[in-house]
Image (cartoon, rainbow, N blue to C red; front, side):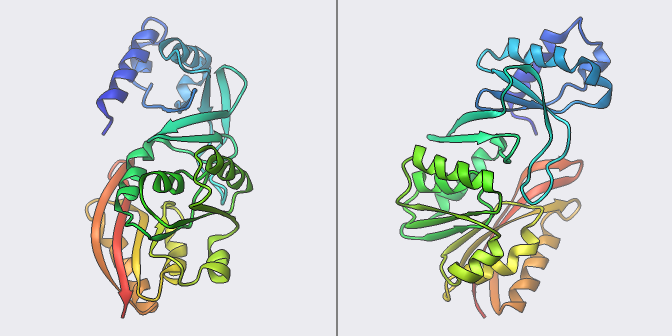
Length: 288
């Protein structure tokens, strides 16, 4: 469900486009993301001839914006990038986004960043206990890791990503947020890094990439300390049973790795499609 704030913004942009788009076309101007001073919007094919008009309307309504990007392809690949086209404003894709008292610099054409996960990042940070060691298997530009460092008393956060551009931005964001004493950025495949460097190292493991988390769940168990710990597992859930299949998968892998799991919390994060959701399962894992 869209927040009242997003609905207000949509109303404003639709008002700005009245008389320029038909009432039927206005129905297809839907939610957009604002990252720093850049807006990212998706448009159906029938509105593409008017993309510059819509982009300029966004700049007119939101005076803090400098650029409007059209997403012309899905998020894809190991680096989680998407094809973007500048349709209004300055010729740039790099921005600085502020969230939860943190600063995140990112080039949206070479890394993945979603402002819609701000609540989830703070939720996880609030659960981290003093002195914990956290392993973030899909860290991107460091958002979860840095929010945890700023808003908890974690001892260390290992921040892993395979995308060199994301890794470089993570290093800069660690410096910008002055959390170099807590956050350790690591470049490479999470499976290889855990097997080589982080076996049995973590009290808590984050897996904030629902498209790939199932492939790496065995790695998450490997990263836990011998006494066990907590795993935050992200997946795709569908109605009528949004969480059941995901937790059944978790229990199956846990049994194979000689762990017993207890579900602590399950929640829908956002809608991907009708009756299809990005979900989170928080569970405790202990040796069988």
